[in-house]
Image (cartoon, rainbow, N blue to C red; front, side, top):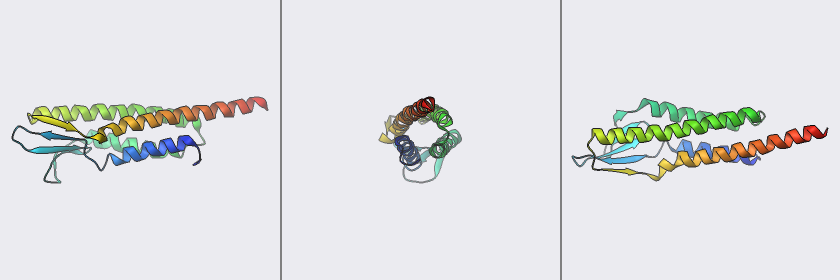
Length: 153
């Protein structure tokens, strides 16, 4: 149901991960003085919108995370399944963080960069994982309440 607090947590988690499609994650200054932008779909020139190096795994992983977040919102009738899927999604978010860091460090080595600047949007998967954890706790409380009510009958 929409009025449950865990639905709001899952919705905020969904919105944060959806925003990852639109914002850069890092900027890399190469040794030649060119600035590259790392986004979810790869490395871009700062001046051009064309992809310099494409990263398929991050595209797939972020798409799966957003889809799972969206689907989980509507599984409110299946609380245990909702908790399990949310936990799996937290693991995927942590994997996305690691994969993004791997690609940024790999690209910075390839370009022999002088500086890497991470953006605030790198924290979105962490915040989204925290909201998913809060949703799991709230779903667990609902499940405990339902089971205690069933015992009374």
